[in-house]
Length: 393
Image (cartoon, rainbow, N blue to C red; front, side, top):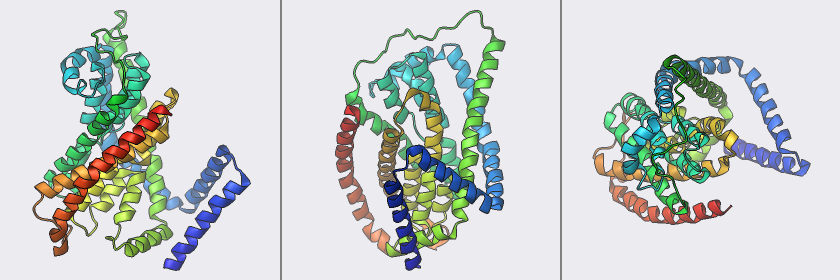
């Protein structure tokens, strides 16, 4: 088993070296990967068909009932200058501590209520309307960025883990992490607009019929865009799950590191598409505290599927996905630590999918808690340094 894993690792390393030696351009490398994906699609045709229906089912049951109506409502609010109305109420409470314009409260609230990717979508809308500066827009992208409370409380907490309390612990970590990111980045922000005047003004010539038509069209485009990403990444996840070699590699690494089976595999899949990662992590034979912390990490990091959705909104504004992804990774680590700490405080018994938790974990629980507290200041310091460097670049 280990020999096969080492052999494939060498093949991957040699392939990377070969690409470097051939001096292939970025477009050529992407073309090669797309070609490989097409080949894998043909080889795993039945799996891809099933994954397509799985993704479509997820879109119909989860995406359509939440994102579409919420998008229509938010679009109507924007058309009727609701941004300035709600900014005056919520702005001083939400935005003042973060040194953001009052109108930035709109995408933050949208994200808190509905999750990915609506927070980003309305950040882009605000910037396009001229309500916020480019600097504030870049900050806001990482603040209005959290998983849906319906998913965390309902799907993960109640359905997957069988305890709604776990969902609220996850929600706490996912809400606090982007706010901490906001406090890290606020020193780099200069002037911001808190006046009651906003560039968006309602044209009296537009009646309700035209406004609702535009709102629905915009919501349909957003829903279809998000749904397409969900289906594409469901196919990718299906191909990965069907590949026994990847399973063997992760099983060997987990045995080598003495980790619970499927723990690394679940985090890996969650880094691609967090719904699938959550399903796997909830079924591993590990402590509930580790499960919640790992799930919190992948939900805050969001995964390549969400980052792809974000890029579809931010692409026309020349936003660096490398910087965005790096900050999301830091957000995931912060969320992991927060969830670990609160789980250690509020969860007294560690039960997990019909597996009894070993007594050694209870003995070392305080030690893990201490390590988390000690690591937090270090992460804060390193993050501040990295933010300054990224801001300069």
